[in-house]
Amino acid sequence: VVNDRNSGGNYMVTPQTASGVINTATLTLAAAADTKTYDATAGSAGTVSVSGLQGSGTVTGLTQSFDSKNAGLRTLIVNGGYVVNDGDSGGNYAVTTQTASGSIAKAALTAGLTGVVEKVYDATADAGLTAANYTLSGVMRGDDVALNAPSAGVYAGKDAGSGRSVSVGGIALTGVDAGNYTVNASASADIGVIDQRPITVAADDLGKIVGAADPALTWKLASGDLVGGDAVTGGLTRASGETPGDYAITQGSLAASSNYKVTFTGATFT
Image (tube, rainbow, N blue to C red; front, side, top):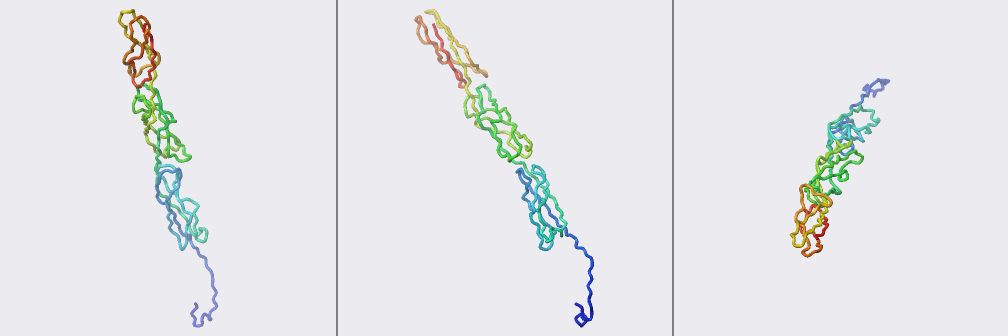
């Protein structure tokens, strides 16, 4: 308004331009601290904070991620791909990003035993396992992780039977991605079978003269063997009679423990 008491009519006004600069504002995008359990991705659920926006401007598409998918101490970073909505394609701002500290905990895997662990009774509780006797659950798709599959386990007892508990220790992980996981160091399951040890006991043919005393009835192991200091106990018998002729020699009370499957071969007493 020209105040000349004549509504500016006393003047001919000529406007002139001048040079000026509007500097860009600083816009800061800061990642948030975050922790998670390993999931084979670098994704983070943290929310990026925004400071320095002017007026009604907004920033959309903001996300953050860990600097690696692997377990351990990590750095959170602001991902690209966000959009500054200021009416000038973001040209009104100088954008800076800030990182944050975070961590990824190892994921827990479960190792178990399966199948059948079988052997013939040998007077020990030693159990031999193969890789097929192990299960591993919880591995993320695409990860290179396996078990070391220890071969030396132990039965809950040494005696023959089925459904025996088998346990094993020293379980560990192998593979490129093993460092991202933990696993139980031992496992057990009722998958043990200890078969009876087969032996064949054969009576010896014997005889005597009428009127003489019977000799001791004897036998031998025709096949198989006894282990761990085990013994065959009891004695053979023969059919009764004292007249000349042949009499059957039978097993009588001769026996081994239930850890053995005994096959008996009889003989003749003459």
